[in-house]
Amino acid sequence: MSLPPIPVFFNEIQLDFKPLYEWAFGDKIVHPETTARAESIVAALQSEPAAFEIREPAELPLKALQSIHSPNLITLYNTARLLPEDVTFYPSVFPKSEQVQGDPTNMKHAGCFCFDSGTPLSSQTWAAAAWSAACAKDAAMAVRKRKARIAYALSRPPGHHATRDLFGGYCYFNNAAIAAKDLRPKGRVAILDIDFHHGNGTQRIFYRDPKVLVVSIHGDPVTFYPYFSGHAGETGSGRGKGFNLNLPLQRGVTGDDYMQTLEQHALPAIEHFVAEFLIVSAGLDTYEKDPIGRFKLTTDDFERVGNALGRLRLPTVVIQEGGYYASHLGRNARALLRGVREGSAPPPG
Image (tube, rainbow, N blue to C red; front, side):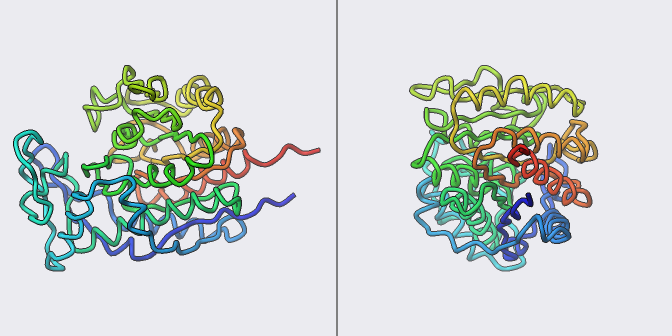
């Protein structure tokens, strides 16, 4: 029995945003969140038209962003649209929130709404981030309306570090949260974040929500970004207590080690939650050659991970997060998606 192609949502406007550099511990470095990332994935998926069907998402309604993000954040991005086309603005002053009320119409106040110096703003930020979020919403809609069992959002820029009122970590809108908001009225949603870096934004948005389980496997924040979030003791609060699971790992984790954590801890938590939908925040910076991540997963390991996720046999939305070894990112994304597709196939007979 042949499997239907996975719908892939992407808009080329997402390539218009081109941050050139970032500041990291005082050093000016080439920005790793390049257009080559998305271009690599598009090329890899186009090479298998029987398995993947690339579609343009519909324009995202403003209310979809407002349901997750604060008016200040949305206003700030709109303010950035007025920057000259050749100007990139880097927040450099980060006042404590209790000290000042930031003005989102003043670019000099951008640091009031940001938590790092690696996530710049330009006149193209709004459009790229909004279309990135639109990809996630349409992927969720395809699954919610049962037009697809699996859907993939090629979301670029990524989203899982963005909170309701703060941007950072190369993220502007939280794409996974936007997808979850779309699915949540139809059933219990599990978000599994497999990015090397903990998705502090996703955790914070759903920290008190008992209908959204957030599970994350990531590099130990004692050593790795975002440092302040992702520790094992963070399990949710209020009615959401027990619905947040962090599985921090040390550097150098191999595919076998990773699969053990996935199969012994992450997947049982999702099954125990009795999830009705699965969202995968698919960061692929766990790859052995990634310049930012410090795990040792191979392309074959991504297919193994995908296969294990597919065997949950849940309606699944896969949303692109990190992954910065651009020349191999396409084949790694294809391997993960191929694994999900094949793992979800009904058994023969």
